[in-house]
Image (cartoon, rainbow, N blue to C red; front, top):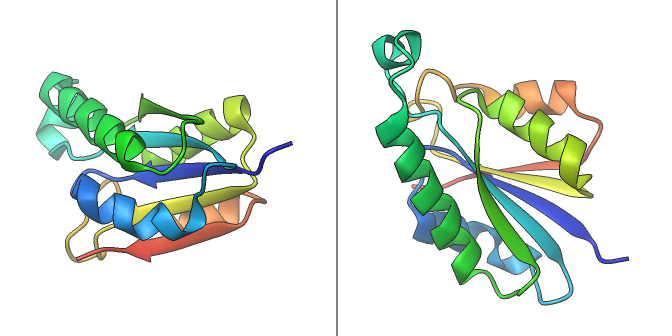
Length: 134
């Protein structure tokens, strides 16, 4: 059975930066699922459920990261607005061996993403690698 890696690319992450961050962990024998949480919402948009534009951006981000990885065994999807819930949903259906969480620094992260790495480590019993990109 192939190793399975869940890649979570949060809202402010450039797809090229996310791809660079995970390329060394992925080869053609690895099965990958890329999730892009819809987490770049303002508090007002989140309260109003006005997430269509951010959902479209998340879909593009997930597809760009997936297309650039060196494996054909990859799929991409949009995740929940809460990155932890997005990881939880993907873990239930994909059963990864490792999660690679690609974010900006907490200073540049959205309010929904701040502290997601530590919260994910506490919540999930899976190796989680947190990669902070510029």
